Image (cartoon, rainbow, N blue to C red; front, side, top):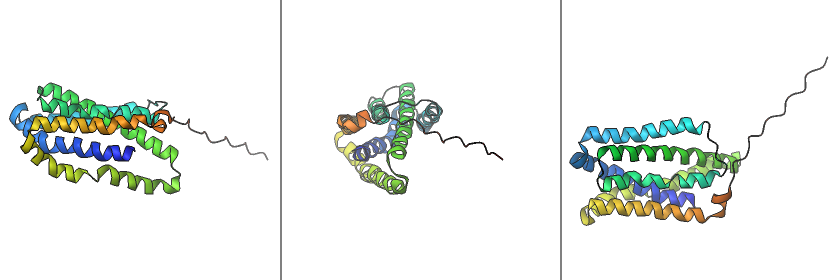
Length: 193
């Protein structure tokens, strides 16, 4: 279910931002430097959250991970206005921060729940499903925007991100999967002579 969710989320969140964002930045936010600041804010959010995730260990990992997906749509909403540059930067930072929350908790769940001998196959399936629609979205967002307008396209992509994410919370497994405590290796008996 989460792989299907991310097929939609990655396609339309990335498609809208990568195709429409630079044009909005050029026309309304101050140009290439402004767009560079937006992308930098996303990266700074990712990095800072990486430090947080070294310490933060939420108990219900997939539930928290799924809740963290909703803010991915914040930059879409900010660009739809478009909001002032500072707001777009703040939304990009929040999205980057939440992307890292999802990524760490998803990887934790995969490594906790999947036997090691099957993990590489499952990660391949995960990446294929999560990225399969992205080329189509990258090709479609521009023509859709030309037909219905940039604002409507960004709002539509926001709805798709929310629409793909909300049903995931209906899954009992997503709501209840808990982080397992790390199993500590038994201490070795001291050698006797």
